[in-house]
Amino acid sequence: MSKKNYDKQIESKAILGKLISDSRNKKNFSLRSFSKLINIPASNLVYLEKGVNVPSPEVYDRIIKVLGPDDKLHKKMDQLYSAIRKLPPPDVCNAILKNAGVEDVIRACDGKKLSSSQMAQITQYILSLNN
Image 1 (cartoon, rainbow, N blue to C red):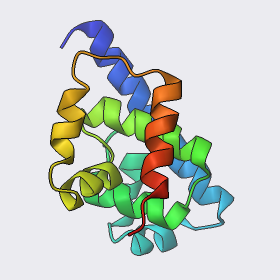
Image 2 (cartoon, rainbow, N blue to C red):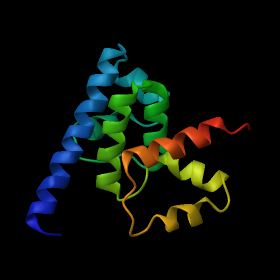
Image 3 (tube, one colour):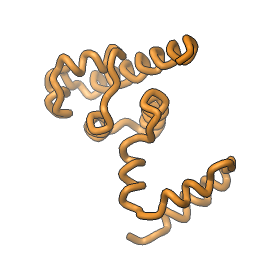
């Protein structure tokens, strides 16, 4: 990993940790109470909030569910998480796993750049489906 990429990853971890910490404080969760809610030791939570460690997919999923960030913050946290872990967010992975064949749809996008209008059309279509 180049120094530039390494520095960017350290910065991303610090930003994600701060967003988690700020969100926890905004919800008035103590460090200990929040660590119990997401089922990790308080000491591990400290490392996450300081940007030393990055949550596992399972822990990140619980963090998001407990904190319930608004859409804008959730998207920012997901972008940071994905950039650090080089993985889609856990809820996206779960959606792929629950919908056999969707990976073929995603592969069809390879090499193409969908416009925001096309993305909106796809989203509207999916939202219109009955479960």
